[in-house]
Length: 392
Ligand SMILES: Cc1ncc(COP(=O)(O)O)c(C=O)c1O
Image 1 (cartoon, rainbow, N blue to C red):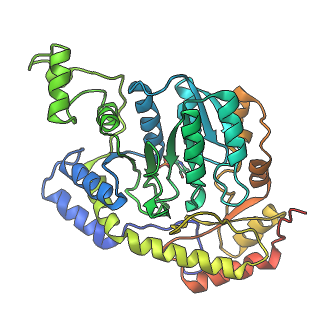
Image 2 (cartoon, rainbow, N blue to C red; image 1 turned 180 degrees about the vertical axis):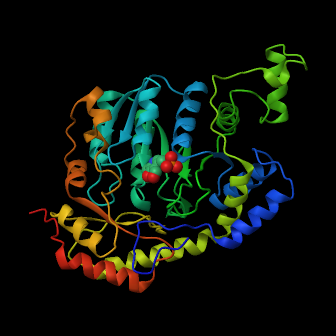
Image 3 (spheres, helix red, strand yellow; image 1 turned 180 degrees about the horizontal axis):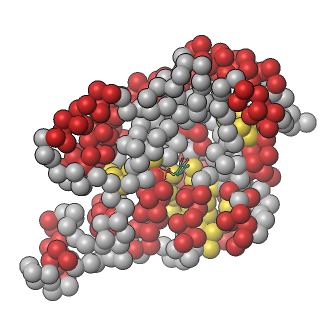
């Protein structure tokens, strides 16, 4: 449903009436609704669109993070339980690591792209000797991936990309999410495309792919390749009677449904157009707000999630924009190291750049249904009250 014309919301539905009609027809045809052929087809189409070897459809971006982190553990790829996570991130970028008993250090953010600060990353790798890193491409902007990969290679760290806000952005020709061992995406309402709830993991590692397919569904072997199933049944001496009900990994149920995969397939067809529109909106904001901080960095193609900036009077802006029927919010959620769940078990860390985002960050709406007039209206209202954060 589109919002009333005088409202500018942070997000708008990407699922349209014709898509819902097509979905209804498909459902009324009596198709199976739980994970089946639509899921496999969506995964095939998504991995091709991404340029990755494998894709696994899950029920959320959070589940995707959980799945890829646990799969690394189950694959025996981690030499210790030390991890680094981005401080400017989301709770479920970090919480799976805590839930699986990792000793987690937060990495400060780069002051321009808001991804990882290279000096702090190198310091943490040197002192903590972690085996795993999860970064976030904040609001669609790429991290300094070449330098980060060099640091990871130097200290033998596996890199995961939380690309939940960066579907379609590129760095050096390749899409974000396809640069590390695995990458995650969210298809929650308000993201670039939506499957109502939903997410995806991509990887080029075939072994990891098989492990994730099993972990996604209880730890059984039903979704695995013929070869892999054969090996597992032989190794564990499993007969045909017990085959479907034998668990090889301590699994979860992180599956989505074929109903949602059906929506995902139609959403994917519109994705390139959505990315173009979001990028145009970003450029218009940038032109309109020259005196305010604008994210910059090595992103080649920007699939913008929102327009993030820094101001000294957020509450005043929030109240003023609300009166004008315009939404705004904190820049993701600031520094995750300042949230109660983290402080309770880890205390306060020294993260000056992330603290700045925590205290002064704000983001303005960007979605595919915003017109140039909407962006002008938001920009004018914003400029009426906003005071730029000045480093000096
Ligand atoms: C960076 C990041 N990671 C993970 C998530 C979680 O995705 P989901 O809401 O699909 O669980 C979000 C949600 O917005 C996010 O911004």
